[in-house]
Length: 226
Length: 413
Image 1 (tube, chains in turn blue, red):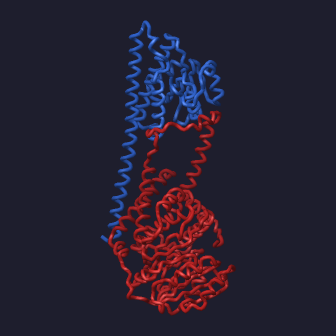
Image 2: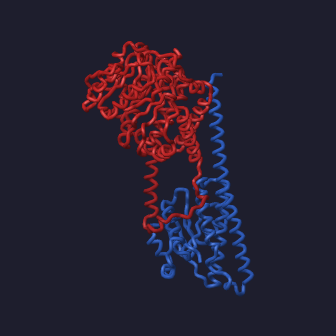
Image 3: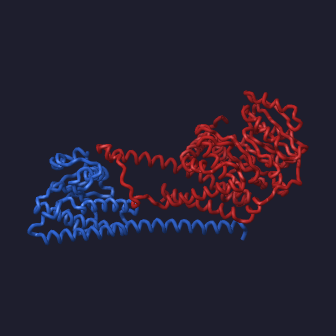
């Protein structure tokens, strides 16, 4: 074997080693990301359960210790952002991403139900938005709608946005879609129990929100919690 | 299947493989032996150095002075200044050296650099070795001694030097300084596999028999040095490199001048390869040059240009998408920076491969500086290179491809 052939083989070995290390590193980092999301979901799940239990324990006078601006809601939106990023990196068909999305959707539904209960019992008036989107190419204005909702969520902390992948194969989500009678015309919104389809502009979307939201909320760009 | 992403991954893999191959070759014996060769002062064949000039009034004196300082037996060295019909003060500057016993001045009508070189070769008909030095370049006093040592091996037909940028001042020149230093290592490694396809204007030396066997310089699509090297390779002549032969050249100081120079080089390469020397591409008879260096050079020009255009398209598309998505949202929100979180740091395979490639390039630069002992600091130049090269170089590649396809020719300057 001459020197050039030997060098070519050694170089191929080095290249494969470098590429292998890089692929492993990227895979490891992605797994760490998913693991972080998983940990956050477990924490939020515990928080939800705690809140539900707290609510049950204080059945007679629950409202004095529960406020609508819990840390829970903020954690849920942060988790949603991270999950969307992971989905962008790993693809919407990644099995781990799909499982995490299902768990996240369940958490959102539980939080939504709890908030409904709180608003009835404790006369708290959060502004809830159920937002149904799709990543499968059948929703041309979902990007715009998602961005507009992110802006509203961060500007008006009273708003709680619950985002759902309309096509996610999850029984609870399908039931929610059925109960709320959501047609597959996406994007779809349920703002304060009122259905609304399509997105044309932020101004048009804002009209669907209660007027007192804009009158009583201080618009901020940081979306800080009380 | 062969979308831009696949092409990017394949290109990065090939680039990584090629750089690894070069690194391994650098460490292997043939290259090691070459760079450890010491100067042999026992041999001193007769040498004629030709300096072709066209409007070089500002640099020709310094170039000539550097040649006069060469440490070489005076009786065996002659300097031939060829004025290729300059319209500035070059002739008057040259006239200062008219009475120098080792300098011959020849004035002719303008006919292009190759004609000036050929005129010089005809004057130096008794020389054993012909050296060529661009009129904007300067040599170190020990350069010729080291260069001549390469000809101790009778099979060596030409030798190239270690070029670097003379006194870089602005960022564009610093970027080129780093690029040239990188080039020193490249030439050193490629020469160990006889894969050089350019004998650059700044100080390349040839045995006189090269011209007798394969002819004089030709126009070569304004890249006569490349055409000559390719012709030599086609004739299976060995082209050596001497990393200790230091020569400094003036580099373009503006982006426009740089792009124009590089368009000439790149389109010259493409035209020579596609129209004159296509038979070398992929031909195992020409060793690593035929099956590796030339195909990869063409592949890299086309892919870098293609991926650059695709990236520009992607950036514009993303900007339009972002504009559409954020339409109606207050600017104060859009422009507010998000809180930094490592979670969102975009660590991708391509980013990491890019970092490895850039690190290897920097290692090659450090090696180039070490083996040539070129003065100057690399830090600022490397930073300029990392910052600017990837933005500027695709521009000349794209334009050179366009010129080649449309058969557009530009003037030298």
